[in-house]
Amino acid sequence: MRLIQPSETCQFSLTKDLVGDDPIPPYAILSHTWGSDDEEVTFEDITKGIADGKTGYEKIRFCGEQARRDGLQYFWIDTCCIDRSSSTELQEAINSMFRWYRNAVKCYVYLSDVSTAKHTQSSELLWEPAFKRSRWFTRGWTLQELIAPEHVDFFAQDGTRLGNKSTLETAISNVTGIPLDVLRGRPLADCTIEERLVWAKERTTKREEDHVYSLFGIFDVTMPLVYGEGKAKAFRRFYEEISRYSK
Image (tube, rainbow, N blue to C red; front, side):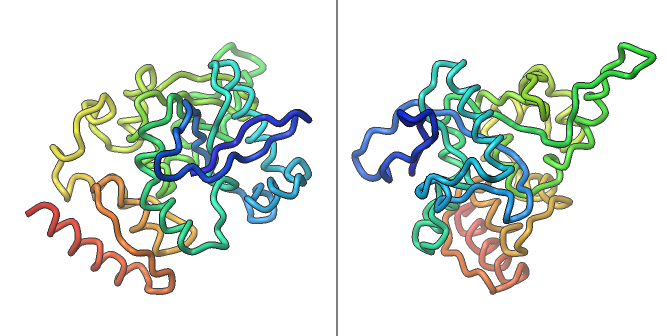
């Protein structure tokens, strides 16, 4: 696991890969929806010092500033903290992702499609219906990013804080179908396999296998990644694994 930290030049740099007995300092973590591949800052962009030339750099800047306000020096973002050219590292990251979100001091949900602007003829906030329609609720990976962390704060595209998992729990439950007691910390092991699968049913991922791989943490299983196997084969392997664990 690598973390991002501010550098002496006010840019951002990556820590070494923290493995084994390396202590992991308190950190914040970002949950967001990906833009196009050429917009997102990659591991290579950070290491080469060219990250600020991409649109996705604004999310890094936002996360760093919010972490600083919360007294945290380090933070983690999936787009650039994983060297995706290494299949071994990618597999370890995906199998560890739920734990990384769970262990974060703060999780910041950045909603790029939610604005805090007001009606011109009214003081009614626009963000409430936009929040419920946000693309963030439709993506596969964000399911675990909502459930795993204890402290989840939601932010609009301009960085305005909208609330947290507790203050927005009714709206979140209505949109996702996740029961309130689960959002409040009810152990996932107390939920049936079928109940947990329903939460993910309508969500989508860019790669079809990720619809299955994004559920590893929800069911507390680990599996090898086989991109190219297709969703159906990935699900068969996954279901065999969770059936074995449930026994």
